[in-house]
Image (cartoon, rainbow, N blue to C red):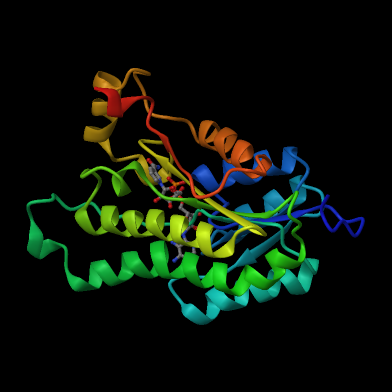
Length: 250
Ligand code: NAD
């Protein structure tokens, strides 16, 4: 049983005004969660999502800025007084051929690490106490990180992007150990998903159509189904669930 104070459980989904994050937020709303929507800048979309979901609220924060990242958790707790699920979905990519080493500048590395690695870490550290408070051994609170299959295999839009997602995957396993048993930590590692981020990934799309057993990339709603399952499965922790339509088999 949760420490239920008669309130609905609250899920914060970062980057939830588009793509995978929006699909996960809408699925968790269907699953009975109150949703804290978040994005860097799409305020109007955020507000329209709030109108469509009872109890939802929109929070704007640039996760490349440490103080805004810390404030995001403080604002969610000030609004709801609890947090049960944190989905670290917000992320950025950079497309650089893997052989063009000088194009992958230290600045690009830092930008990617700031949003894809340091922000999730900061959000988890800031949310830890609240997640513990709403948790019980039978129904632990839950952190879900959206990484990438490129963080597992030597592939991806650029080496810095893939390495940032590998770091997020490893962080997932380390934190699953250190936050158990009251907080579970898992990740989903998608292959190609049809979102604004991937709209110009023509070569990747061709690869998935030609080589993956499913013959296509995923829709965001298919990643959201996996998120729903991981959030609801109270015994799963430390898993990196790959969603690549079987590409790894070929
Ligand atoms: P998207 O561009 O639709 O969404 C990215 C989200 O991240 C946006 O909502 C944006 O507001 C947020 N974001 C970006 N920079 C931010 C910042 N500085 N501060 C706050 N929020 C910021 O793309 P998507 O495909 O839905 O991506 C979601 C996640 O899935 C990302 O972590 C991405 O790396 C990962 N992913 C995507 C694919 C794919 O093929 N689309 C594949 C593997 C992994």
